Image 1 (cartoon, rainbow, N blue to C red):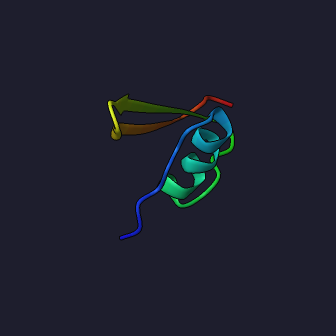
Image 2: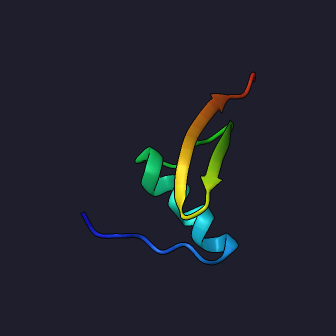
Image 3: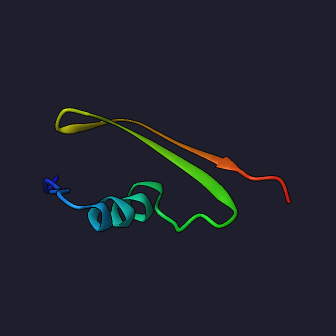
Length: 48
């Protein structure tokens, strides 16, 4: 697996779609960063 390098805020935003394999709409996405790795990814659907 190729290693991804994330250095800037736009890199983090691009990573969301890559990690979830789609672009969430009407959702809250939380990503936990721990040193040089992603610890957790959470997506919560917002009420309509």
